[in-house]
Image 1 (tube, rainbow, N blue to C red):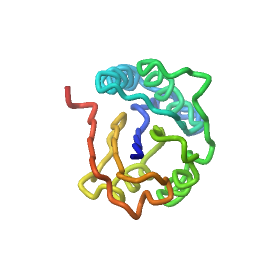
Image 2 (image 1 turned 45 degrees about the vertical axis):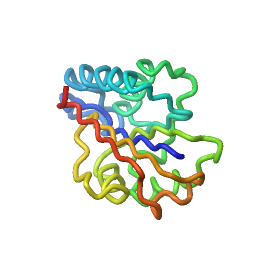
Image 3 (image 1 turned 180 degrees about the vertical axis):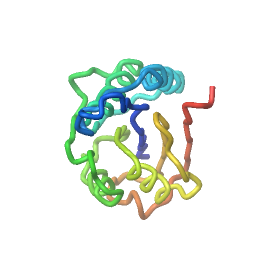
Image 4 (image 1 turned 90 degrees about the vertical axis):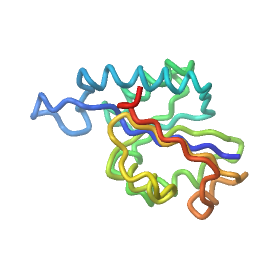
Amino acid sequence: MKRLFLVRHAKSSWDDASLPDKERPLNERGEREAPKMGKRLAKRDVKPDLILSSSAKRALATTEIIAEKLDYERDKIVVDDRLYGASARDLLQIIHKLPQDVKSVMLVGHNPELTDLAHRLAPKIIDMPTCAVAELTFDTKSWPSIGDDKPAKVVFHDPKDS
């Protein structure tokens, strides 16, 4: 079994229009929702083998908050610049190249790419709002089969659900 968590970063701030997009921080709502989502995942006993985060400030902040709630060590988070501005196809290629001993991966990134990828893998997912998590479980031993094989189980975590 391989488990893939697609996480859209929490709500970001647009207060400082002079900031480059990559430097935008979380806003107050994002700072509230990220720990709640982390706690929700922790209650499900989510223990990713690997967490990959976009290098954008808002994505990395979301990643660090959720990782803390999952007792995932901050220094084990892999910041991957390719996740910022990647297409759904690019994201799938990154997934295909994951080490085979990794059974569970959490990928934290951006829209529209995450919605595109989530929808491609699980057509019932049509939108990934900020801080949403698509949890996809595949009955496979190989990351390269993700995309060809449909998930055996799909759980969608919307931050608006309590």
